[in-house]
Image (cartoon, rainbow, N blue to C red; front, side):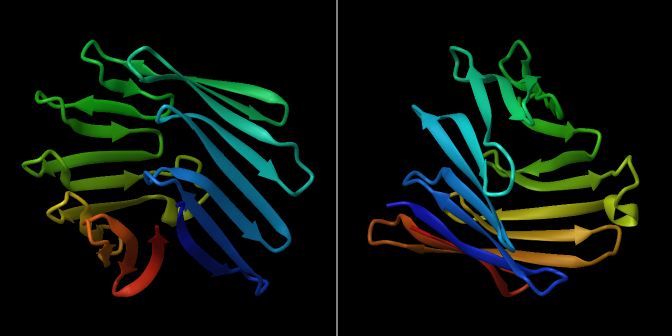
Length: 219
């Protein structure tokens, strides 16, 4: 069946409870994402073809027409173009790769690799992520993220830096993540608990932040 993430609820300044819902297909890919606040509801439906995301259909119950995001791939299955409709206009993003087939630009982020072909850095106008260490199996083990707000819209909150440490379980799933906010020196602990069926396939994933449940995905 479909995977469903239990709704995340938020209370706005007017005391109205807003919430989000996420739905996943049987192979764990996002199939629907819904945001509901007050009397409004936005829904994104994800359409796949042979495992590749081909289109995201955006619908609104407010006074707006439906919109879409479409993806074009090359013969290697790499995305080469994204076309987005918004307010009757079309916006196009082109993706670039190096001679080894690694993506080096996606219209917003630039990607830099080390000699082993592992991602070393990704950066944009707003974010610079630097990977400091990998596990023996090639998964990110330690990295930093620096956020910048060139517009100044978010004030001091828009400029911050954090360091992350990641641990995995024996199946290669993220089991723990530690975040150290270098701006405030605050530390947050993320824990991911999986419940498996008799065959070892996970059927429930629960995320805890500093010991408190944050979200839960059920199969």
